[in-house]
Length: 499
Image (spheres, rainbow, N blue to C red):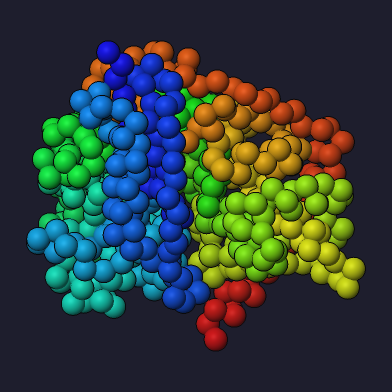
């Protein structure tokens, strides 16, 4: 009898689900889209019910392909939910989640630096102080939304909230706890009461049950099983922050290869046995074997998001899906350097490695001869420069190849551009290295239906793109200007933000 696993990825702009066999054969896939709110510059909020509705709708649709008794596990990951979703004692959502993209907690970040030394913060958590981290967002909520904070029983990451609804069990994956930042002791694998007290936060408002990605976080309740076409008691695995399972989805179950995930945002990651501290990276326990491996990454707040914005504002004859495809084709002849246009892609400030909340997206070199295709090409080059800047944080020992996953990896033009800018051989996978695939793999390992040693057979490299040496040499010059452009304008934005 064939058995099946559901892998579900709750993303920033949409949820993707995959139904596959325990031998890795994909049976069906589907995606539901939604949006998030940006009520003020630098703010980004999301509605938890959008996530729950998308997940349950997708499960219902995909489960209809097979008998309910044959679905033996579900793995669910989610975007980095920042503050988490505030729920009251009855589990009801009482406010939005301040997601990873939100940069409002600037004053709280400065307060952290006064309360805790950088050396202590790094030694305990391996991470620094920045509005990106959930703990600074919690500080903002306690100060600016005291009634909401007081009424909140728990702040739950996206995947934790959905799993609690489906199973009645509250948990947090080690990766999500580590990504919350300054209140998680990465050495002990638990919350740090000492730092929580110094930051004047409340330990009891955080989930208390830590889980790995390969142990059940709960089991489907009868009421949901009947509604979704599942078997009551089907195990559900909390696989944590999406970029971890996305890396697992490329076949990485041990330290080594650099992976770049390009979706709404960009994450360049390296799995190691020891955390790479003091490199301005974001660090948390890896999705697989979190007590042994660490996930070290740098990345851009906005990658595919600026392409989507460009299509919406400047190419309205296309939708969000057809626009990038059409513009890729129409901009193929634009030369390196985009006819003198250079873009800084920091439309929502920037996290690692720049850690700058004030900087914004900037377009240099526009003239009366500039076309929208010049601009579009410059937006793509900006993403490629950001990839290179992030990857270089890992030092010179990363090798000659980068595995590229995520929606942007479907653009042949973009993939070649990243190869030319970085000078690295770019590998893409047939599966796309999606987080939902990684979550399914982790759930399969958890029920012992999948052997971790055989996972690499599931991942098929479908393209190997080599850099063009001449293009790389020219891009080296533009990359210098890209970094110089930020250094020359960062002071302006810091001053400008005070007005």
